[in-house]
Length: 257
Ligand code: BJW
Ligand code: ZN
Image 1 (cartoon, rainbow, N blue to C red):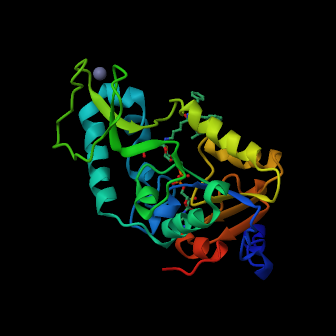
Image 2: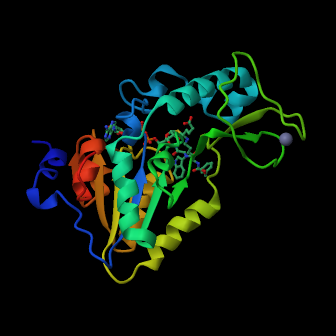
Image 3: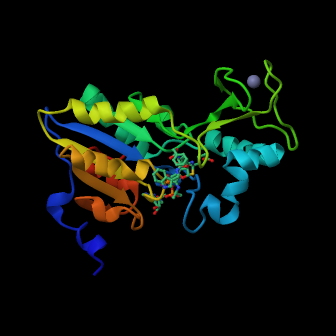
């Protein structure tokens, strides 16, 4: 049997069993929204199988053909607005209520489903699908649910440059304040157990793929919940293979709803 599966099947490893002094840092990826009907990026059925990410999710691709990029993001806005949070999203919102400031959720997802499930201690490190910012000036980011008609590129009211989706593309920097918040959370908890849990992420994209190492360096116990073997699976203490909509409620000791 694959070591990845074997490590996942011990019954003693079915729950995190968080105590009153313990803290939990969660990192989620596209797999957590798969059961809400949204495609992941990699693997079969993933967005990058049918769409060229260098044309659609890079600043160079946007400069070359902003209308094409807006078509891709407008379709995804429509899909995200139609989707509903699933039991995995809801379990994370529920455990936040129990842990309060001992909890932080960092998501790579841009679909807004964690917030719609009720998560508030939430950092969206790759931005928001339902946000727009200017490609030319620092006009503040705005909430924007518009699915623009084919061929239309919205323009900045201040500088007339093309507006762009408020997501983080390859080669772009993440907000340093977001990475500092992760560091600060990991440094803050000295009393009880510190647990790091990644769910629904292939571990292929940095810097998020390295959070497990940051957590380990602070002595955290590390868990992974994923449908398939993630690229960084070998760096976790415990691995559960399966669907996050089933495994997250179980791991967090909550009934699936
Ligand atoms: C289920 C499931 C179910 C399915 N239940 N599981 C080393 C250090 C630092 C940076 C780099 C580095 N090496 C390379 C870099 C650069 C680059 C990078 O990581 N490249 C790699 C591809 C090699 N990183 C960056 O450019 C980042 N910026 C940066 O580091 O700035 C500093 C810098 C600048 C310049 C040079 C160097 C450093 C930015 C990354 C931005 C990522 N953007 C995207 C697009 C967002 C907008 C959009 O949506 O269009 O973010 S790419 C895409 O990947 C998206 C995701 O958030 C991200 C991660 O994907 P995720 O969530 O893991 O999804 P999948 O599809 O990969 O995996 C899903 C998993 O779920 C699968 O494993 C399934 O099995 C599983 N699954 N159903 C549980 N029901
Ligand atoms: Zn502007």
